[in-house]
Length: 176
Image (cartoon, rainbow, N blue to C red):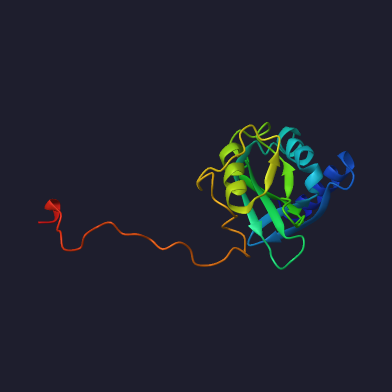
């Protein structure tokens, strides 16, 4: 993990390449994080991957977060690894809630990191965050006909009753 001065140097270099791309930095739970403009996410990820001295070439994790009631409401977190230095860097893009039937959107990182494919689909499936340019953005765990985004904080608690088909009086052979 870059230390605090190292994280600030990364932030300044990125800001020199694309002004306004880095909105802030912080260390939390021993993790260095860049907060970036969602419209610059691909430029930031590409720079972190390709720039000599950075070389964060592995996307270990991509996940969504719902910060309700805070604004901006949604976040997409990218956990990048530099395998040579055994160094981890988190990149966070904050997305507002467009309201109505519109869904929050951010560019897909599949072209840069193929491991983002199924992870972006999972974030879409559970949070309703659309990844523009994703090659196959559809539900991955929930049925296609499912209505709603179950990991959002305003999703109703409870659920459908579970129908058990097992007859408790009948003992299976393997149990005897």
